[in-house]
Amino acid sequence: MDFNEIVEKLRKYEPAEHQFVSQYVNAHWEEEFHKKRTRLFFKNEWTAVMDRFRGHAHHAVIRSLQRDRDRIEEYLRDQMRGEIDSEYRGLAFFACSGGGFFEIFKSHAEFSDQLVVDVRPHLKQLIVLADEYERLLLVMVDSSRARVYELRLAGVDERINIIDDVPSYHKAGGWSQPRFQRHVIDHFDRHHKEVAKNVEALVDEFLIKNIVLAGQPEVIAEFSRFLPKRVLDRVFITVHLDMLEPENVVIRKVIEHLQRHEHFKERLGVREAVKQAAIRGKGAVGLAATLRAVNERAVRVLYLSRSFRRNGLRCNQCTLLSELPPEDRPRECPYCSGDVAEVDLAEEMAGDVIAAGGTIDRVAHSPLLDEYEGIAAAIRFEKVAT
Image 1: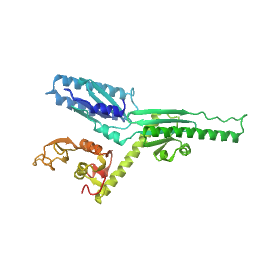
Image 2 (image 1 turned 45 degrees about the horizontal axis):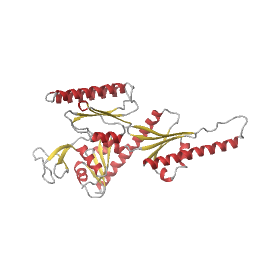
Image 3 (image 1 turned 180 degrees about the horizontal axis):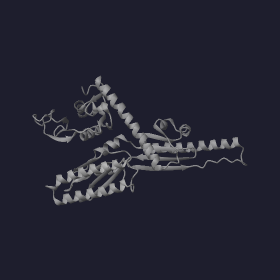
Image 4 (image 1 turned 180 degrees about the vertical axis):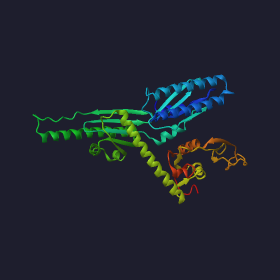
């Protein structure tokens, strides 16, 4: 099941009498202690969940949660031993045994460890991940072969596999060396031209916005000559690697390059948002200013620190978001004095921004963003947040 299908299935899920489990796992385990840390984190999280429901929930709810926990733990044990899905860095489990629901979403990008038990699926990390990592085309090419993949969050879908046999060099007999070399060069050109034609067709068919070229530098340069400008303009990164490397190694290297590129872009975006906010331009920083921009549907890019955790209020009448008031103040909407409900601000703001046509960047390791409560935004027009 691909990304769009699983998100649609989760969104259509109707609450049952049982609780729904959403468990996100960072499966990027470089050392054994990373696995131990993950096991301990979820052991504590599940203990807290079971303690919360054990005192008052119906025994059928408890049994459903226990089955969900055991099934997820069994899967993670096999994954940690390298028996299944060891190439993925992020795993998301969506389960309700009592309701007959169990799905696993596998990602080449990392999730943050999280366990949410509620009546509905918790989709925030999926939504943010989809927005940060768009579908792209990976073109691996050398002088005689090419492999073209469509990279998705849930895996790799190989579209075409072109293999051309280039004549080998003969020491004796046959053509003279200059004539043979011309023949080989012509063969290379025909090969690259054919691959470029296939890439152009895929870009048009699947509306690909981003392309990654992978291979040796001189081959990439030669192959690029055959790509039309409108396709070449979509190449945003090149990766130098050997076509003989195993597929899982190649994909891992490409994902690492993409993540570094994404992190660099995020840092530049945060810096620009801070600069624009300082001159009352197209930027907002801090929770209060960013909330105002979100409420005015003015956010183009919302930058959230991965450590951002804040609750706030959603008005049941005007639907606007606001910060929690001091304890001595009434809980009411500051805009219309309507009734409010307490919400997770990160999730609600992300939903509002995406609904308004904006995007979300979850930013890791940004001291500059941390100076502004872990939140900032690039906005569509000036003087929205002052």
